[in-house]
Every structure is written in C-alpha cells, then in structure tokens.
Amino acid sequence: MESRISGSIIFFAGFVLGIFICSLAWLWHLVPEPESMIKINESPVAQPKLDALDEMEYNFYEIFPKSVVPIVEEYGKTGDKVVVEQFSWALQAGSFKSPTDANQMRAELILLGLNARIVTAEVAEQKQHRVIVGPFDNELQRNRAQDKLSQAQIPSLPFKVPR
Image (cartoon, rainbow, N blue to C red; front, side, top):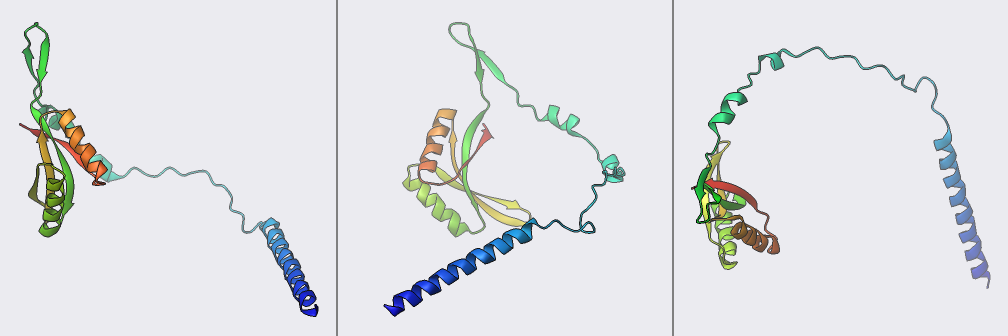
C-alpha cells in the first residue's frame, strides 16, 4: 500500500512541476522586447538602375515572326474549312545519363504496349539519353498513351514534333 501512495505522490509532484515549468515558459514569451532590440521600420530606398539591363538586347521581335508554323487549310466535301496540322505529338518518358537506365525504361514501356525509342542528345556537355514514346497523329492517341504512363506511375512530358 505504501508503494502506491509514494508512486502517486511522485506522479503528482512531477505533474505540478511540469505545469510550473510550462507556465514560466509562457510568461517568458509574454515579456516585451527591450526598446533597443526593436527595429524601426525604415522606408524602402530606391535601388539605382543597373547598367546590365540597359545593355540587354531584346531580339524576340525578330525571333517570333521567324518561328511561326504555317497552317495549311483544306476544304472538305461539304465546303467547310479543315485545318491540317503540320505536326504530330510525342511524349518524353524520361531522360537519363546512363544508357542502361534508358534501355530499362524503354523495356518497361514496350511491355506496356507503347512504341518507345531512345534519342541521345548533348546537354551542357553531357550526353542525355531521352526515352521518347510516339509519335502520335492526334491528341487522342497521345492522351491514351499518357494515361497508360500515368497508371504505371511514369511521368511524361508531351511535345510537338514537326512532320
């Protein structure tokens, strides 16, 4: 019986001590900072213009007109105008430094029933092996392939490929 009383007394004393320490910490956070520590809000100062911005050349006015893709229009049997797209779709399912990793991803995609190939490109003086799925003639085929990839938890990036 004495062990129960002494155990409950120890528990009660620890409980009271814990409440006391928590209340001291709470009071410590309520104490205001001394005036020397408070920062005075200063108004923002305007930064001088950088010369680098003045020296930049904006040549997108010349780039955009040159990158326009012509749209071919044809007329159907009923006389309605039909726009013929001059591109197809493809999906990038990964980009790897190692050709072995790229081949492994390609094998997974082939097992899913997708047409996959590896394209090697040099990016920042390093070879990158990109796994490309497609090309697809329309967005419906691209969306179906993208759904298969997402169900297999493989992220993909769609892009247009000129025909």
